[in-house]
Amino acid sequence: MLEALKIEPTHKTPKVYLDPKENHFEVSGRSIPEDSVGFYKRILDWIDEYANQPNPETEFKFELEYFNTSSSKNILELLKKLEKIHLEGKGKIHITWYYDEDDEDMEETGEDYKALLNVPLDLIMKVY
Amino acid sequence: MTYSYYKNMQVNNIIFVYQGEVTAELVSSILHMMENKLDGDGEDKKIKKKVFNVMVECLQNVYHHLDTLEVSVDDTEVNDRTALLMIGKEEKDYYVITGNHVLNERVAALRSRLEKVNSCDKNELKNLYQSILNDGELSEKGTAGLGMIDIARKSGQKLGYDFHPVSDKYSFFSLEAKIARY
Image 1 (tube, each protein chain N blue to C red):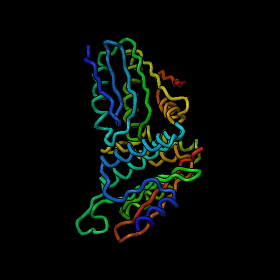
Image 2 (tube, chains in turn purple, red):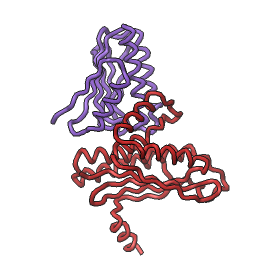
Image 3 (tube, chains in turn red, blue):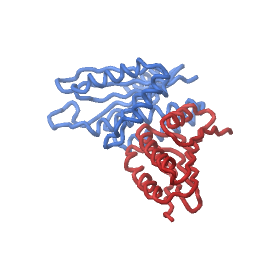
Image 4 (cartoon, rainbow over the protein chains, first blue to last red):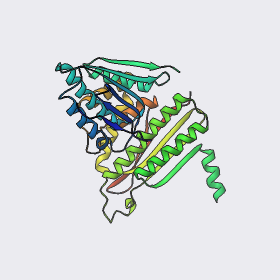
């Protein structure tokens, strides 16, 4: 089984926790690096590896507070790689996009992705 | 002298102003400082997020732009790649203003992009954003041509902009984004 990819969060980059063994897949926090391509490369490469032998069911969770437009493209790429696993029938993918109850921008971002993808994606409002 | 600077900033509701070279570290520091300021002022969480998001896009936009600007030694007016960054808080709005040099040959394209963004309503901006997100290629720096659209979406108001001719080669481009406080 593919080794987990765990990246600690910083004030500019999200927590990344991708662990097939625990079946826990999460990107959360902030994603506002100047160089988003550099940051996401490791994650996208990891997903490419994971696509070779995905779990039968993958629950992938996004819980972002802030993100910049330069990250948005990379996140779409990540989501498209997950979509491919799903559409090719290699494994079932389910994505959950969390947003704060007062954060209509993050909700809209989730809607943007949902509109562009053909994979189960639920938008869930976090209520405090 | 100092007092007049102080009064001038106060009268114009400026809470932050910077003129100088723009580095990644500087952008991070400003964002960090402004986030603390918004927290300290007890600003509504929703407004705070919008202001922070718009600041991120505006400041990183300038940073990426200056990073790609080729400057030769004889260009005295832009030899240090400086920019102006300004953040203000008026009664109704927060505003984020950036100013930087751009090559004259880029002015037409920038102007038409801004005109396009300003001509869109909320729904059209959403469609434009989605189509560029889906089709547009990423530049080497990861910028996707989405910045202006994103700023306009989060601002919810028309963007202000100006191109001031500086020389045969450069113009000074200023961009103003407002975020309603309620």
